[in-house]
Image (cartoon, rainbow, N blue to C red; front, side):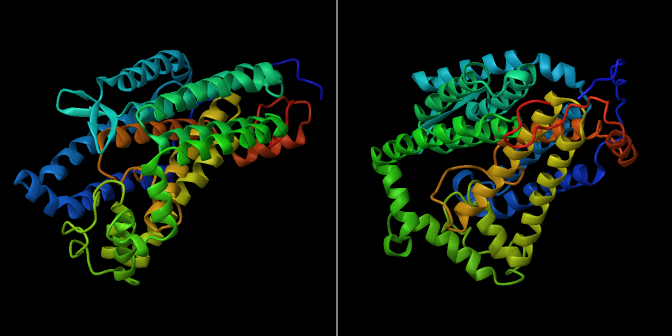
Length: 399
């Protein structure tokens, strides 16, 4: 391919993807409503104030909205400059938790208390990993298919974060980091053989991590036979399935669910989708799934249309970050996957998850401002001598 003697002109930012922005704001607002509905009884019994989680989630939502707007407007080059500071911060916080400086709950130490707020470093680690992958892969664009430069360093950094997650222990976040690394490398054009080899090595390691942990084995048992272990390991997933089943087509009505009356553990956090299924029914869950599908569709569209490789990888990574979390959470609540302990993006209670996901969504909105128009795409296809970086096709290596 011959290259034009003149570099392509710097693209001026346009408006953000309005439908994507509206969907994201709607999900954040919907999350505040559902957190209150799912937590009022529990908050009243634990804190003597049914509005406890509503007030906190409302504050988190306001901060998340500011993060969404800020990251949607910041210069993309500034995001790139933040790569290593954010990566270093994530490593230090993860090390602090692994060394015992975190707050423990439910048999795991995953949070660091900063005043009245508990921060979960694993959420920041996922964001930092995507920022670094996008920066590194764009910088090594012509060598991404090599083992020592395009593949091995990224796997080593991902492995470091995964080990720090397992030290907490947080198996779900370790798996999520592995999936994000795999899909971003795949999108960037890493050799399929290297990726397949990594998967083949990861499977026995993952099996060993599960088999050596009694509580993880109990989760597998509960996943395979939840109703036979209803009074033990399968209690949570059984109550979740009953919640979905009692909702029917249209639900029992917002606020009228019964499973949140201290029957379903984690009703306002990891299993909030079960309360949505009970109160809003199949229709409500279907609309929620459509909202997340729309976020993924528009995010990948932004990645495909942008004319800069770094921005393309960043948008693809952040989109899959949100989409994979949503899919995993919903699949766990419906009994399609073993319990992972991952929040439903924008909807579950929790400040760390909400703000980090809002920052990721803001980056997607930011990159959506630089997509080429349909006319420009037609001009590009008609002019074969114009070099235009694109999100790499699976398995492709050179431009």
